[in-house]
Image 1 (tube, rainbow, N blue to C red):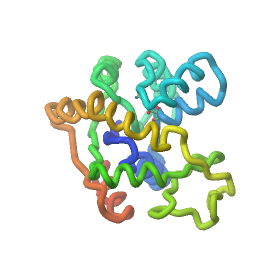
Image 2: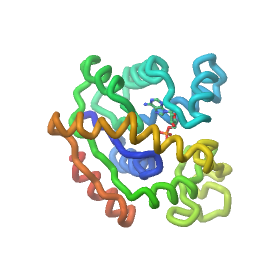
Image 3: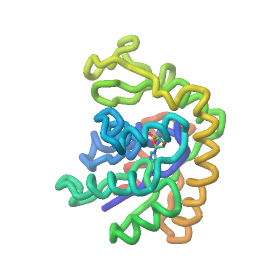
Length: 209
Ligand code: AMP
């Protein structure tokens, strides 16, 4: 069973996907994480991707699609997976459908513009295990340090004010049309996220059942 988590940057889909993975074992594939790893590894593609990410732009399709295909081909994805941050434009959704992967359900996570900006500004990531925190909403029990693995917390470059506006603009222009695309296919379900995290998780899990 394969699922797509859709929604603007900062809506919390990555955090919920990680929690779902912890509860159910369903692999969580975040194209943002795959691209950040590729950039860290210093490959030619990774370095190029970093330039796009830094500017809040979408990385070219061939790079992302190739990363996703390679990740999906791994054994742990045989029974299904959650795609978080992919597809992000129609051409990617069409490539996914052409590759024969059947998407069971698409969850469209929703929040107001102000909430999204507040969530992005306060987001902190553990550099060691990738855990996602928010300075007010989901704080670590240890200041500036991940309470799960003691890794240092950092703010993503593209979560800083300069890139946020651009990323949201790109979302509205390129990614939002996917809502209509999946609605037409009859597999889109909305989840409102302006509520406590345990409630969002419960709703999400009941959709994935
Ligand atoms: P995210 O961690 O999902 O917020 O993604 C961070 C950045 O990675 C985005 O702003 C894009 O630059 C890039 N990225 C992630 N997923 C995709 C995708 N499916 N297509 C193109 N670029 C992507």
